[in-house]
Length: 309
Image 1 (cartoon, one colour):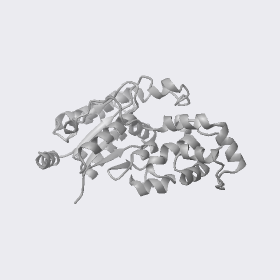
Image 2 (cartoon, rainbow, N blue to C red; image 1 turned 45 degrees about the vertical axis):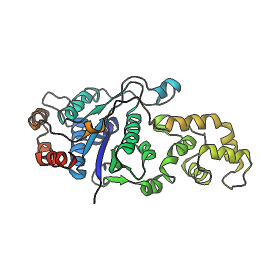
Image 3 (spheres, rainbow, N blue to C red; image 1 turned 90 degrees about the vertical axis):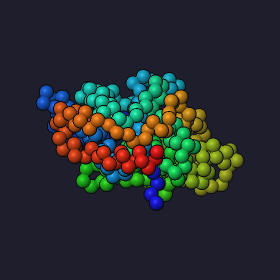
Image 4 (cartoon, rainbow, N blue to C red; image 1 turned 30 degrees about the vertical axis):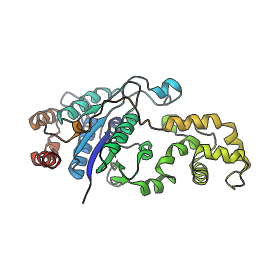
């Protein structure tokens, strides 16, 4: 018997994936670019149609500085500001989510990752029958994968299919277990988030070190004991010794928070009825006529309500 599914959407990851993945020719009659709105809406509705979740929520980044940026100024400092053409699309996307009657979460000081981590940890403690499916394009989410949580990444174009990551798929992709992903990034860094890692340590060496010693702390403990493991070449030893402090900071930056101060009630995320006319009117206004047929049917919501209550 298939498990019930909680679809937990990484809002901004999906927004950026849509902005850069869908044509810039998608505009309103007045010339406003809406490719991210279309991509976000299409991916969300397609996933709902395919997975038939019993619960749904969307987490967004807050525009204020995050706690990570306050503690480490360089964090994500290399990222360009949000493209001017994307900014007005954010509120339209939130309007789509609201019209679909899907709860939204956003808290100052915390990234969507942290809200997702916290919600996921809470759900795991509340309902063992639920499988949380994190819809995202961000590999950072791999660290949350376990027997009750999978990551679902939508494909790009015709040649990359949607993929669901369980524990084994993460190990195959990253070379380490899900819980070791922050340790891996602590050593090799992450240029997309401007997490420095140990200078000169790449993915291959970082993976070998974590496979051998489990954690960054384990790596340094073995280094101090002069462990004879061949991965400790003179060059690697020197790099690790030089950047020990930054390695530990990098791991902390890469670790998703699971105790953010979020007001979360699982029952409130149960799939519920929404105004199809409101969403239809919004889609017609945006020119998304083709998406109207993808809207969940009344029977989908009714069946879930009857099954759960």
